[in-house]
Image 1: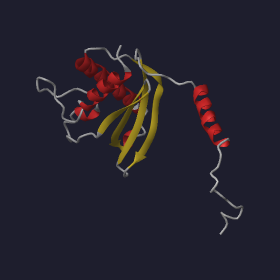
Image 2: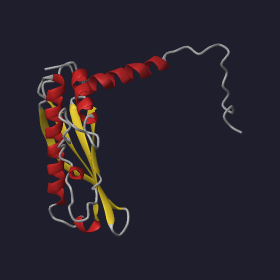
Image 3: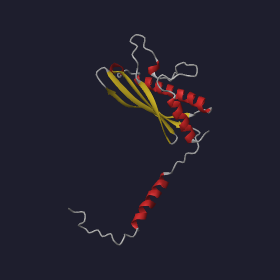
Image 4: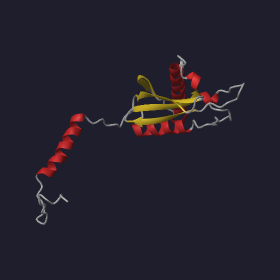
Length: 179
């Protein structure tokens, strides 16, 4: 597979291609898997939802935000609906990544869906924020530092300051910091 930097560039471009109103090569609207793409025939009220992608090391995090009526917050299926939306987004990212780079993006889900915030904007409207993390498989070029290496580097840096000689013109008296 590719270097992690190339994979991140491809994921970012795939996410950028998912803007609201995006169309494919034939001029058809892209099916990203978000609720805003589905029409509501009675009221034709647009649903506000969207996603973002962050990458840290070999972990990709899909953040999802959605506005919904307050009565839907108590729905028992809300978590599964949001999880389904995130899965649809990852399917879109994989497909778009394949179209852009010609290589397959292999993701493995880490843990479960995290429902971060469900907050109300009014008595009628609420919004929900959720995220899910995925492990990018087959990435090369990412060095994972061992915790012991980091601790040793910090200790050696701090040890540099213990044995240094002070300049002859530095004279700090015990009462220098008192006012």
